Amino acid sequence: MADAADLSAWSAVDGYIADSLLDADPALEAALARNAAEGLPAIDVSPAQGRFLQVLAGLIGARRILEVGTLGGYSGICLARALPPDGRLISLEIDPRHAGVARANIAHAGLGDRVEVRLGPALQSLAAMERDVEGPFDLVFIDADKPNNAAYFAQALRLARPGAAILIDNVIRGGRVLESHGRDANVRGARAAFAAVAEASGCLATALQMVGVKGWDGLIIVQAR
Ligand SMILES: C[S@@+](CC[C@H](N)C(=O)[O-])C[C@H]1O[C@@H](n2cnc3c(N)ncnc32)[C@H](O)[C@@H]1O
Image 1 (cartoon, rainbow, N blue to C red):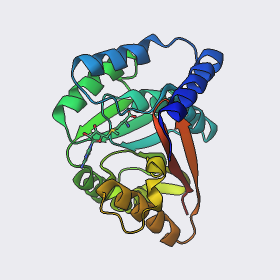
Image 2 (image 1 turned 90 degrees about the vertical axis):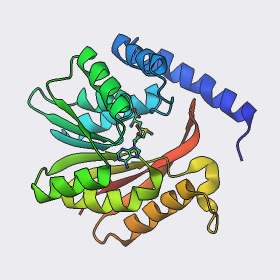
Image 3 (image 1 turned 135 degrees about the horizontal axis):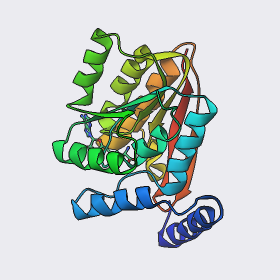
Image 4 (image 1 turned 120 degrees about the vertical axis):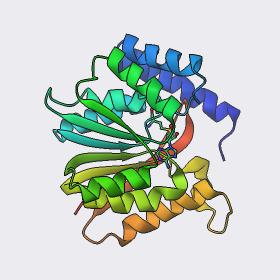
């Protein structure tokens, strides 16, 4: 398993990636500063991962994006930057304080016209979206409470267009995803996500391990049926 020396090396390389490929980003830096000032946990995606989300959304020409788990809006800002002016990102968040901070960060980033932060438990919000026939979405980013990963994936699949990208974050968990009989609810949620994706007929999927300033983790990426 990884130790402090690994994290220091991965962080240094993330620094190199940022210095080489990511411009100074006042809006994202302000978002992180506001998150910290408001006491939000620093569990947003890293700058390199945020750029990955933006590039991916741009590559597939996403016009409608769904995010499950907003926090302070860091990943949402990255995703929304890939949208055309008439595109839309709906981001689901259970915590009113997180949602409020996210709305302020998103407005400060100049993206308030195309992003909606929707407050409530995501299982309920997603069920309401299905009922109201919202979507279809071109990209879904699942990054909320990990025990509900499989349920979120099933709902995302119903809300996504054929061929859409569905990403499920934090499924490697420092290698603990290998713990087949562990009690950790987040590890079990990661394994449930792998099982649900494997059982979803017609989907094409893989998982990518990622290391960096946030440690050792990774995501499942699915091409929806
Ligand atoms: C890992 S953070 C999201 C980070 C964000 N995607 C980013 O990278 O900037 C997870 C968020 O999901 C929210 N969350 C947890 N349980 C939830 C639920 N049942 N429904 C909706 N949101 C939930 C948490 O309050 C937290 O803000």
